[in-house]
Image 1 (cartoon, rainbow, N blue to C red):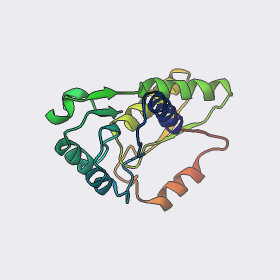
Image 2 (image 1 turned 90 degrees about the vertical axis):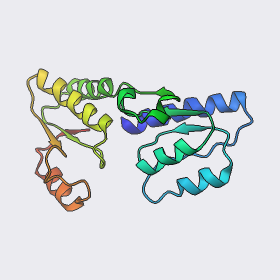
Image 3 (image 1 turned 30 degrees about the vertical axis):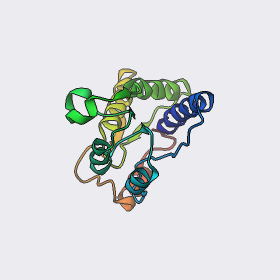
Length: 173
């Protein structure tokens, strides 16, 4: 579901750009190893539409004097002041979690699990809570990976063991 939400946002943005352009669009996801800073600094961009998940991206964003539309940022009340002056598009991440739970419930699953995003970003925690709450409201348990300190996001072997230990079949978000 997180991938579909991102894909739908991109589709809308690129559709608008094709109607109102010509614009050159660089897709920047803020993923580890991506040369985002160099691209933004050297590319002479006219604006930014994107996610600023990392502190480096937020710092760089503050130095650029271009219009910015930020996607799925943290709550405006906790954003650094320089981010508050930009437009924000936020998906209803709790609704996504509830929708996913309802989908799996309609498919008659009885075992449910959620894996938090690697960085345990606010949207991931909120989505997992909403998913688990909806599942529990229907009388089922929901295992959540990433709730405690032992569930380190960079420990792939631990995650694999956790996944293998889940009952089969399990609806996994």
